[in-house]
Amino acid sequence: MKKFLIVMAIAAAAFFFIQKSIGGQKDSTPVLDTSMLVSESVVDTSSFASMPDEDKSAGKKEDKKQETEKQEQTAVPKGVEIPHGVRPNSQLVRHANFTLLYNKKTCEPFWVAWQLTNVETNGDYQRSNDFEPDPDISEPYQVISKDYSHSGYDRGHMAPAADMKFSAQAMTECFYMSNMCPQLHNLNAHSWERVEKACRRWAKQEGSVYVACGPIFRTKKYNYIGQYHQIAVPDAFFKVVLSLQKGKEKAIGFVMNNSNDDQPMKDAAMSVDDVEKLTGFDFFASLPDNLEKRVESNYSLKAWH
Image 1 (cartoon, rainbow, N blue to C red):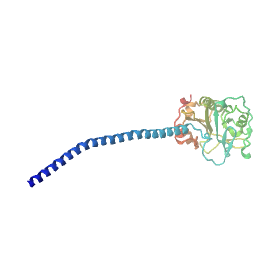
Image 2 (image 1 turned 45 degrees about the horizontal axis):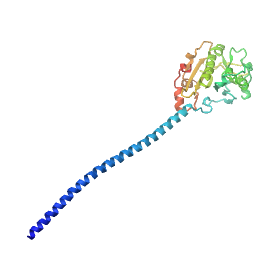
Image 3 (image 1 turned 90 degrees about the horizontal axis):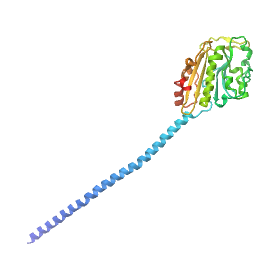
Image 4 (image 1 turned 60 degrees about the horizontal axis):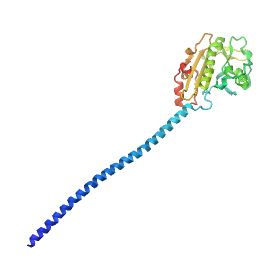
């Protein structure tokens, strides 16, 4: 009897234990599933919540980058028209409306640079034709008008008088002899003048253009003119033009021989990079590098018309 009671007690305990275990498993299963669902839901919600923030942050960074690039493309550094490049025997002269680097060896400018705005293309000041020595040039190198007399060459303006008719001072200073180079007449009065007129038209069209021009010597054996000063006769002339009209930034260069032959603009046009190779100057160097590279590496005359 005693053994029977012990066996019954053990069986009852085992049955109770099994029931409890089964019940515990049933209770734990939905809890486990719910926990997984909740956990997944939290992960998803967290990821969706953070992704817009990350996208927004990335978007802001991208917008800021684009805005910076846009500002770089449209900002106008002070003196952007001034060519870079050191030259011996030179003197930098800043007049009210143009700047020049004077070559004391050849008695003419290495280059002349200026900005021409839409407003400045209009004016009532007529040509003075009063060619005078530049008082800012060191006296031994002050070319005078008589140096060109009977030479067969015009006193060719680099910064043209028609660009300076908006101001009496501008007109006076553009007739300083430091702004002149010996040019054959047909070049001065026809081919070169066509480029000058185009620049004024472009200033009206673009709102503003930046211009630099000067002589080119292809050899070191110069021909000279001059009764009182030795003025070297250039082989050719260059001109580079830049527009920073927002979204339409562009540049173009021209090289024309110092000859009486007719030289159409389309034949003289080239990239600014090509003009740099001929002259050794770095034009528009204060522009952001990406913009400078873009506008100087190619050109299209059609894009200017």
